[in-house]
Image 1 (cartoon, helix red, strand yellow):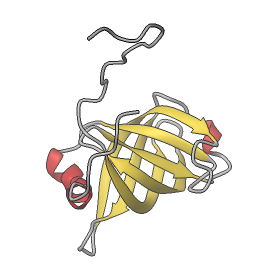
Image 2: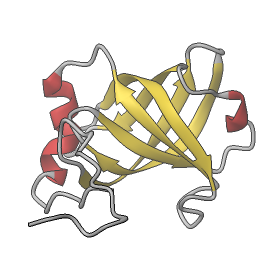
Image 3: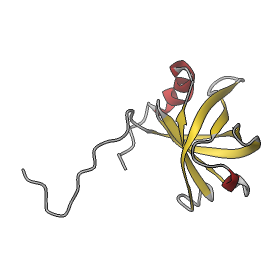
Length: 130
């Protein structure tokens, strides 16, 4: 079947399905020695996660910067430490969650560590591609 004229088909750029996540934690920008920032996560995949914050000085952090993220491990008394790279950031994307939103790509993190947050989220349906 032919595509309707004027509509472009965008291939799925994501290597892993995303899942909804409700978790609060902290982020430190290793590149700029900034933070900690209080963050809220709204989705996660094996490749990365979306975070939100109201921190006024988050505008110092730029795409390409390395971040250290800390989240409580579900069902445990320990905290998870995940490293990642800021891929994008936007102001006002989800203002009910935070004035800034940003995407993190995990780097140098063992899959088993990511799955400690991802595992409970995977019990839900994958989020639609956007």
